[in-house]
Amino acid sequence: MTTLGFQRNGVWGEETAAQKIEPLGPMFGALAASPKNAVKGYGVPLNQLTSGLLVFPGIWDW
Image (cartoon, rainbow, N blue to C red; front, side, top):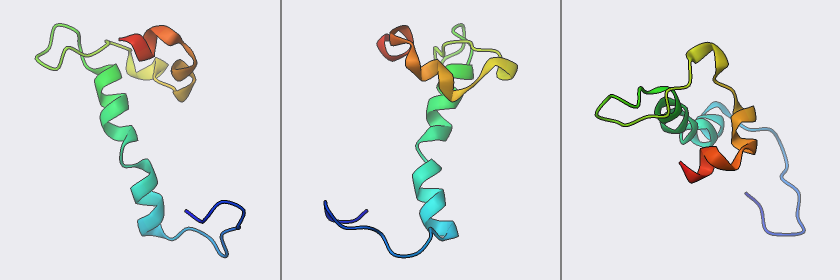
């Protein structure tokens, strides 16, 4: 990340990209986990798992 008002010079490397996607795994894992499981997930079927779900307030409230 750069200071406000400046632009980043160059492209992301493999490590930077991995750091940006790291928090998405647990979030999508929780959405896909069964509500009957110890994790108490949301139970979204894998073929319906998408970042578009994040536009629904019910997902955030869960």
